[in-house]
Image (cartoon, rainbow, N blue to C red):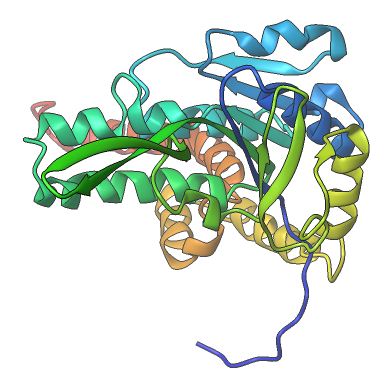
Length: 297
């Protein structure tokens, strides 16, 4: 634990786009992603929306990973790891609504436990683990979620009536506050506005159309400050210098801040060390056989 002067560092984008179905969430996410990378082949879409991303295949050769039920947090996290290990620069998760209310999602899981308030004690850690996989990814991450009509119950005297109350996000309350930017597509003309913005690029600005330039603007903001690449490279070298799986495990436990960002490097080094471990075990077993007169261990 060390007190130090605050310093602006380069960051990876965490952006959410919310809207009702048909307002252009997926299309907007792809345009922003291309503005960030300038390379369609470095963009991956984790698609829970019945392969809807394929409707935009004419834009470029982006990658797609279809995610089918059950929509558990673990399956989302596995999909994120696949994209990271493939060297993607931007991951689009379209959408996160299913991890909340889809088949096998968190609401269904909490319901299966009894649906009581105390059952969230088991469901919430799964949500947080899933959220951390997004927040700690080494890639830029863009997510989408659906919005639905909200309602209020109004009591007047002995009568109760239901009134429309705007649109509600179909994801856990507070999700957008974890993002760098949260955009809402407000109508079928694809106009967007910021509901939360740490960059200052879109706050108090009129509604706008999401374009490739939007992604370029955001990338410029992300790249302000000191690069963390030297630190990341130095830690990768530490991983590669581990000579046993036990040593690699100790390094992993000692540095939780690198567990997600360097997951691909940890996995790669573990696979490299496994053959050596098997060879060592075989050699030890061979020695034990020869040191025992009856051939038993």
